[in-house]
Image 1: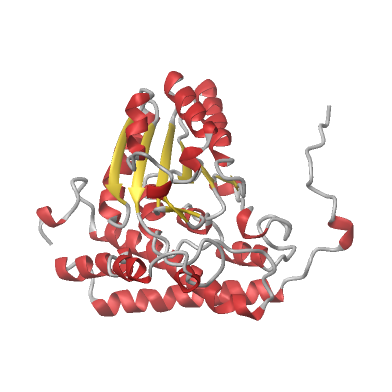
Image 2 (image 1 turned 120 degrees about the vertical axis):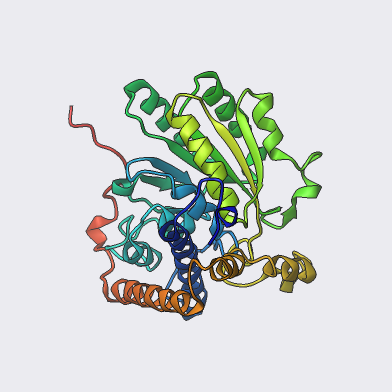
Length: 334
């Protein structure tokens, strides 16, 4: 494996395998939901990120355990990449008391503050101002933490996106905005919504650094995120990263929405051929970082971890009715 085959950050073999492990863990977790959802035991809607795994993996590789992430309704992959406990996630989807939100949140409201996963919001753009608030707190406290905010291309049309990016730039807050541009807001294509399809250009307009990258190339994500997170941690202010990608499944649920005419099938087929995991698998084996047998074995290990998460979720109890009104609001002790 020669230097020119690595990223400009000269990743080690272990680093490369770790990136692949995170991507594959997200993919297998989401595919397990696809398999199980028809059983109708999960009562919450699910928004899957199959096809977008490289972004969360490349970004979280640079985050410390106590750094913050704020995510959205399509947040399973972000949480897993940040180290979320898959058993607690799965239990939440089944509405069980052992779930990360006590069985009350479902897949759109996941949290694990011990890992810096500060919560996901079902409101489009809802996590953006909360993430900027966390970054403001870090700036005031000088605690050295960085906040990453994930949002989709649809959220970039919300007024709060502009307000938050402007404020973060004005105050030079330690925050990175990661726009996962998968080309669709629900079923509306970006070309029908934006006069210009270059969201990253909004960064310089508001005084923030920006980059537009191939979100299916985990090494491109890794390099760009490294610079952005270092900039934020060192007082250089925010960065807006636009990562071009594509979700394979429908806006919500385990199906593919080209079947109902929401997207052209040939577009989906084209993007599936650009699968970020298949591309990285090929790179690892071609460059000698791993053998195909090693990657298959890794997949087997991850599949068993996910199977254990499912067993945990199904064996867990539902919350008692007397828990209905707990943790609904904060009660001050003063």
